[in-house]
Length: 248
Image (cartoon, rainbow, N blue to C red):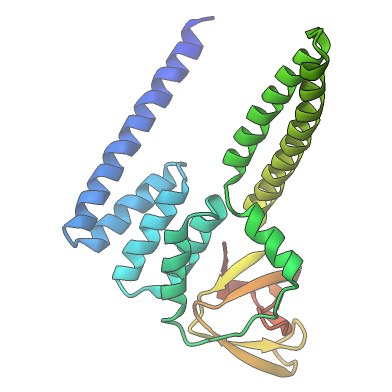
């Protein structure tokens, strides 16, 4: 019975070593200016089932160096979903967005929504979860002080500090859940067609509303057959073919 888990662990270890070796080759190819080779190697790691914010970021960088700004935007967005607080990802995404045709002004957010979003995206889901668990353990320590101490002052400190830490742990774990939901969310996409005409309904014969170009980010609202209903940053809504976008 012990043999099977041991073999599984050994195979997993070899698999991780293999991915690390391919990543090292990819990084060297990128440093040597062989961006096409680097991109192929990074995507090989991705096909092996490994994903991380850094891997997506590296794919984005290699794509950018090859002037494939649409793919760069897609992978920078994927990197940000995994690690939203990383300033390098956001900076490179901004540069890549400056290379595409469509410049869409987003609808201004209310200040408290902007503040909340900025707070939650400071860390990834894993970091928020670790912070939440750590603070919860500290709150249990304070609770222990409250129950076992015979000194009134220490009991008061244990009670109020424990309550505060418990609330902080609750919010940290809630933020972790929010970030996890964002990570699992597939309702955003990048347009990969050179140009696509947005329709008023899921029908080629419907009214033309506006035109979008490759690299533009859209929110997916609904799907009917081979059509997506989408919304862009300025609030405009319409329909486009599934084949013209790739989900983030």
